[in-house]
Amino acid sequence: MTVSPPPADALAMIIASALDEDRASFDVTTRATVPPDQPGEATVLYKQAGVICGLEVMAAVFQQVSDEIEVTSTFEDGDWVEAGTDVAEITGPLAAILSGERVALNLIQRMSGIATMSREYVQAAAQGGTARVVDTRKTTPGLRAIERYAVRVGGAHNHRNTLEDGILLKDNHIEAAAQREVDLAGVIALAREGAAHTIRIEVEVVDAAMAREAIAAGADVILLDNMTPAEMRAVVEEHRGASADPANRRVLFEASGGITLDTIAEVAATGVDLISCGALTHSAPALDISLDVRPA
Picture 1 (cartoon, rainbow, N blue to C red):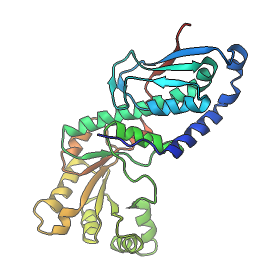
Picture 2 (picture 1 turned 90 degrees about the vertical axis):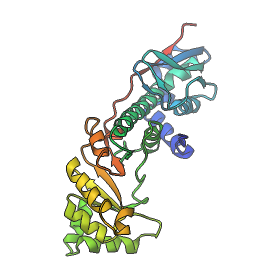
Picture 3 (picture 1 turned 90 degrees about the horizontal axis):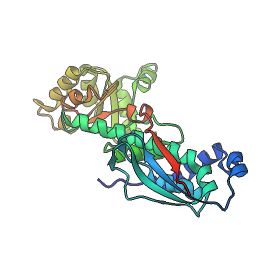
Picture 4 (picture 1 turned 45 degrees about the vertical axis):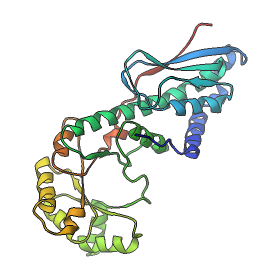
């Protein structure tokens, strides 16, 4: 699967902000101990097995620090490597390499951790069915572009990227409408009226009765929130199996809420089309990766 890289402008902003946060241009330790013209070589070592993700991002970090730094690798994002694998070589002014080291590692460790967890979830879901695993907007503020790229590298997919990208009527939207004495069908009608014809309307439901109401009102996607696999299966079968109504067969079903590696296969087996997992971005542990300067 070809994965589109993060937008160049977003990536440049992320890197610039991270380098400024770390005050990389004012590295007093390196300034005091390493001459600016001392050449250097270093290797990037994956100390844990996992999915490589962020090679180009790492290279872009070092390029912002110094255009004399070069990063080379025989690997690509998406490759699986075992612990103890050197995945990249870095050459250039040693002082500049050391000043960019922490930011480069922070980003590639984070991205590789997300890609690795995403692959694990995708592989586990495939044991139960064909549901597509997707992320959520539970991303690190400022890092969404690279975190969602990492999800794709791991083989999962992205949900809506921003609030502008789709209508998702969640419990608080429905409660806000109820306070105005507007029922669920009325909220969906308001959403349909205010949306472009190209935008799907997704509705979060908590039980079968609410799912029926949302589908009857014209929802395009039903988000089954924190329901048991048995409850999900019943909803999907009711609206997709015996029904002769073509409208019911076009509805997509998304499972969400507390889904783990241990439960995702069972959820996929219910027949849902999508499984959204916030854990892909909010709980993925960073992979252990180091940058080691080679002896001259």
